Length: 337
Image (cartoon, rainbow, N blue to C red):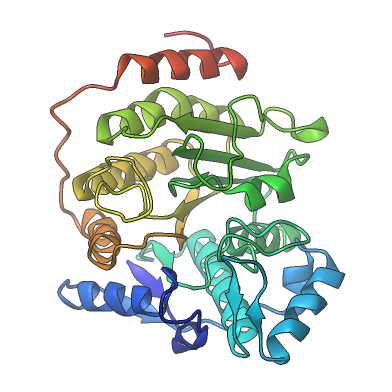
């Protein structure tokens, strides 16, 4: 894989006790140093105009001024320093690079993965929240749509938290499909199954709120039986994975039971789906707050693309997961199995 990375993202200082720290990127790089075939690219930062394409311009200016004046607590969870605005633009720029790189289509290109921070999927159109200031995946999607590099973009969010910001930005749009598998009831409390989009975007939002404790088999069943037919119908030109690794069974702030091998299996499934619908594929880093599990998760994504064959789980999805997926297939007009 090719990884988008910049030291600028290390400068975003959230303080000693905050879970989203620069040590996350340092841990990822240490983990990748043990693997072969890793290449890093330092992309240009996003412009403020690119950010304002998905965020309210007044909000963009407000965040910029907040950081330039020294930062502080935007809210109890979302912390900025005077370097945060540059890091946020850089993180969004790495995501733009990943989307454009994926769509480039030149033979021999490796799948791109943007390793930026602060993360983005909680940032709504006019507010920062949940550690996020700029919605990186949304900036990347809008960028390739505006430049006519793609007509339709799908974003699959496997972070344990619902990406309320990404949903909010594209909720009434027909050219962006947003799908999320997340822990039901966890922050920010959005992403109910009946949130399916509005107006022109009706049917282009797919939420799968799984109860706490679900693991590999439940996630894979959801991808195979729900996400696959939904993506086939939407027919995207680009598939962006909002890749958080906080659904891991050892992550400190969630109660899901995904294993490191589970992330390899999800990566393999997503790669196959992209091939089946003839979509370019890229990854954008979101959450993951156990340093070991985060670094192992990113490394196993790389290893899967590098040829390692993941092993299917021995267990089966829970009956209530099967029932939820059947209900969602019906809600989204995907038929029954």
